[in-house]
Image (tube, rainbow, N blue to C red; front, top):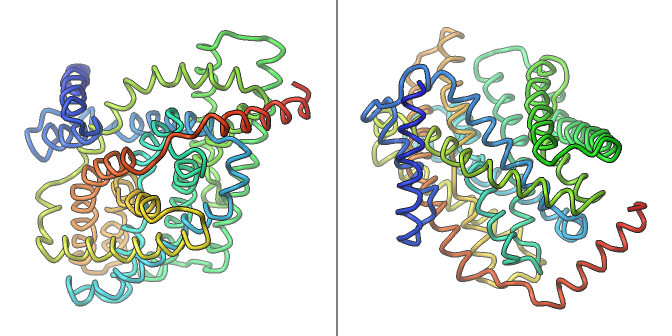
Length: 420
C-alpha cells in the first residue's frame, strides 16, 4: 500500500503541475489520474489502498471543510443565508423530479427506482466545489456579492437534504420500516444539531487555545482529531438521532473565525499546507472509485439522462437567483457550480443494489442505478471543475478597496462586541 500511495503522490504532483500549466484546474487531472490508476483501469492501486480509501478521502474532506469554515464571515453569511437554503434544496428537487420522470423512458426503470436514482444524482460534490470556492475567496473574487460564500455554504447542507430524501425513498421502495415524518424532520434536526455541536466545540476550543496557547500545528492536529470524532459520532447516533457531522466541522471554523480572526487565518494557512497532500489523496481516490465498465453500461441513455437532469437542476438553480443583484453572467456561474458530482454518488451509488438484493428484489435496477452514478462522476466531476474555474475567472470580479474597508470595520466592531 505504501508503494501505491507513493506512486499516487508523485504522479499526482506531476499531473497537477501539468494541468495548471495548461490553465486547467489541477483537480481535473487528479480525477483522471485516479481513474487511470484505479482498479478498474491499470490497477496500480492495491486492494489495501482501496480498502482504506474511504477513511483517507474523509480526512481530506475534513481538511477542506475546516478551511471552508475559516473563510465564512458572519457578515457575508447574513447577506446570503436565506439564499443558501434555497440553493441547497430547490435545484436538487428539480433534478430529482426530472430523473424520476425520464428514468422509465430512457432506462426502463420503475417510477420509484427512478426516484431513488434521482436522489443519488441530486447531490453536488463538496469535495470538488468547496476547494474551488475557497480559491476564489482567497483572491476576493465575487466577495462583494458573497457569491463563492453562498455556493460553499450550500454544498454541505445540500448533501444532508439529499441523503435524507434518498434514505426515505430507498426505505419505501424496499419495504423497509421507515417513519417518513421522522426522516423528513431529520433534515432540520440534523442541520441544527450539527451547527450546535460545532458551535459548542468551537467555544471549548477557543477557551482552551486562549488559556494554554498551543502552537498552531498542535491546534490543527486537535481540530483534525475532533473533526474525525464528530464523523464517528454521526455514525454512532444514526440509529437514533440524525446529525450532520460535516456541517459541524464547518461551524467550528466559522466560530473560531468570529472569535479570533488572526488565529483563524493562522490555522487556515496551516491547513492550506496540509491540503497540498490531501488534495491529491482526495481526488485521485475519488477517481479510483469510478468503475469504467459499470459507468459505460448505460451508454448513451445514461449520459442523456444525466445531461437532462443537469438541465433541470440548472433551471432550478437559476430560479434561486431571482430577486438578487447578480448579473446574468454571475447567475451562469452559480448554475455551473451545481454541476460536479463525486463524493455522495461514490458513497451511496451502490446502496440501492445492496438494499434491493437484500430485500429479495431483482438486482437489475440496482445495477443500472450504480452504473449511472458512476457515469455521473466520470462525466461531471472533471467537466464541472473545469467549467467552474473557467467561468469564475471570467465572471467573478475582485472586490474593490472600499469593500475591504467596510468589511474590516464590521470585523473590528464585532471583535469589540465579543470582547477581543
